[in-house]
Length: 392
Length: 51
Image (cartoon, rainbow over all chains, first blue to last red; front, side, top):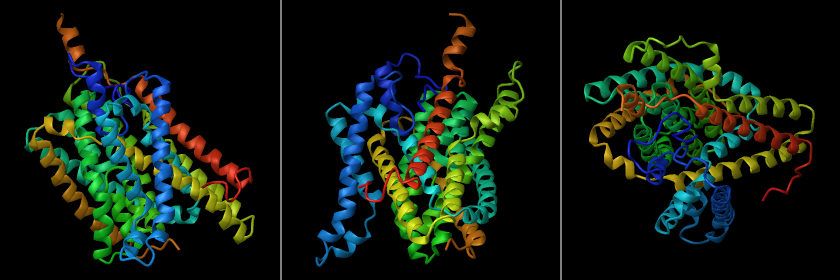
């Protein structure tokens, strides 16, 4: 979704050509409205080409490095690392040649990651989702409410604008860029506030992809607890998937269930913010009370696809032999990996730090402190709620 | 410029076609993901086809 689509617009007097790239810190916004389809297609070709190179490296590097001093390193690097690094490299090249913002219409991270997550649902038994749903919902409610309110309070103490507080609080407590976009629509934030929040999300998410798997190993966490920690802590869904993949399949499954649960609760927060700003902050006389329709409108529909894929695959696997089932679901997994690679490449292609420089240190301080609280609280909750949980 | 116009320029309305497009992207991901899964389990996309 573009910033314009979310209901935010460029600042006054800002040329459209400048405003578009400003917001591409987030991978969901910043595409010029009505971008010509040949450029979008060219952007897609770039993403596909980098994804193909990623797949090639992922399949061949371990074999090529076998027997050398780098053998362990080659075996340890997972495809998200190649994809993000190649995306960042492509970003640098396209920025230097002035092409990046023109091709940005093809960098559809949100679409790629959601399609990949729907396909991931096929490899998770419905029983696992049903068993994990309870602790995942509990963790999400405690984390979202605590971290949101802490960030809101800290932002107020440091004198941030109410709308920026709302965006940062939603982004750090729920699901990163998607939540920031939802909150921007709810509180009618300005475009630069959304761009800035999205920049912060990605600036913090990128290192988390590598730091959290390392920390989970260093702390000796089980795959399930590591997954719950990653899913509860890293803000944005694509980065959660990347970090979970680095830890392993079991961690990825739990991380995804936890993150998808947070995604599902995003609508509740967005509707609550809409009502709060309408009735308490701006006191609009024409404001109407939000209803169930608003909740449904803001509900991330891919969550339904994720659960439906699990239902379909669980039923289908009960009708075929174990070997047939494993081979066939392996094909769905290959497709899932392709979509996730496309998403990770897009993350690298869309990353930019320009708008971060404009807002000063206070929002960065709020976001960093809130992230630290989120890390500690998510670790405690993951250990408490998922220590006895098993995906196998 | 009237005061109302000034306010409108500073605080643009946040709801409009945006959510519709987001919803479309959400549904598109759901439909394509499920469609691919059905093509896989029905054998239309066979083992070995995806590189």
